[in-house]
Image (cartoon, rainbow, N blue to C red):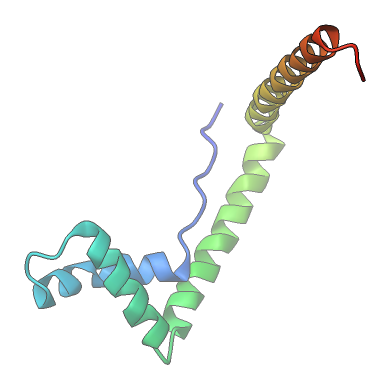
Length: 111
């Protein structure tokens, strides 16, 4: 079975990937976290983001087509399995909570 398609990058992430080297050049010795922070400031200040929004929309359309093919070929089973695993964790927490509540009740009969 083919691998599940990866989600497309947002317009901001596409832009940041292209601007990262320039940000590093303009700010020598800048940390990775600071690059993202600086990138966020620059992105918010940009007037025309249409180029990046267009690229992101194009990538999202392609992703949606790939997901349809993936699901058509029986690929959605992976998602169901992940949901079931999460449901088990919730069920375990519920059972644990119930047993704690029962312990509390059995020890205190004044209620």
